Length: 583
Figure (cartoon, rainbow, N blue to C red):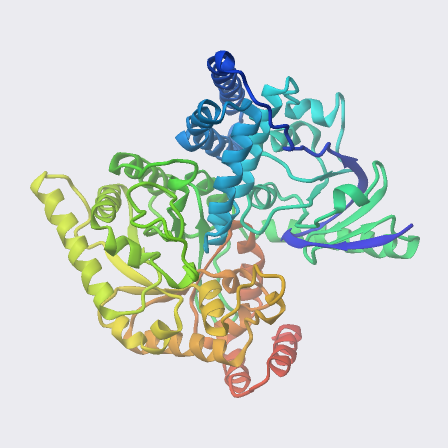
């Protein structure tokens, strides 16, 4: 029987092959009462299991090739999570206090941590709950005597050229097996756009659809599948007509990808000779290689939140400095824009930035991002010092998230001067002329952009949050996600106002949200006046191709007419015509 499943399109392309089912992990464990005399032995059993999993992760890390540095980064993340006292120590306290078995203790603590992560507003951090579950899964398997290492889950001698992995979830250790089997694609029940599975799939160029909910239960082993990673569609047992149609589409995509590779060294210049800057968004130092491979001219957004993942304390200045320096040196003189911590205080992620344990009703509107950094000046100062020190090794710019008031900029500049002064006193070299910019992701900042233009060196539009706050829509909420509309007239008016205001003031304006990496939006953004785009590295070639096929002098009048429209449907219709028009 043929049927279709719909999920999240996290890595584009089309794959056609047979289903290869991976056993679904279970964390359902029994609650056993331990006699007092056996409690110490149960604690020791837990410690032995944790150490065994740690050794497994270390072995995986050692065997990670240079070509799979992204996977190695996530193995590091799982090591950090495993070493966090929240998982390595507190379960031992639970065993002692409740006289329970180790499996039950760590699963109870996992549920507590997952609840904290899932309440976080930031999507990237929220999806780290999957990593916590995967680490605990491996410890539980070790405790129960069923380690079930990644290679055994795929089976001996499996050749995956025409196989599509179907799983509830995949850990970095599972993905390590891909380097030998070369699977055509993978699909999972869980995961989102910023989950490690999504990031790794894009980095490896594997079509993937996540968040399918029940694919693992509905699909049978060896059934024929079509995975459309662009539309987020999985077709099970397609009829001959559909199969033929997708085989043709797959061939066309492969031809286009081959052409796009030729654009790596080409300049992003429009038909009327306007130079456009194409930069990369990265979330970890290991992604520098991807940025360079894609032809990025620099890093337009380096998210620094990864440093916090899987730990119970604040990262020190030295640890941050090492990470920033690694990125800057890796980019070999190209500019790197480092965004300061975009964290929330709605949950206790770490000790120093958690002034209250009270659950917030509206964490997205609470103490987060620059608000939290200014409320906790000591760790913020340490980050600024680390960034300044790294500026000795290349061109760095500092980007401040979630600005809404002029006094936030003034306080940040004062903190930056304090950091500079302390480094001067220690005779530590840094870039005295380092530029500082602000993210425009709050409607108030977009409307009052003049306040920021007079105080900052550059601006960067974060479209994800700007759209969310403008429309009061949480796109991760399935009940209202359909109302998330990047082409709402109010959103376009804000984008136009910020870009035009920056141009008049002579202040560069870039865009680092998802709109920047969507080739269907490229001509619209060019017509609005945007000249700096920052996106996931894999998106750069396609956006570059669109730029090279565009003439700004022809586009601009059309976009001005689009801005006068008041209905999203009509705007969408005109943009489709704009993209179809051969300039």
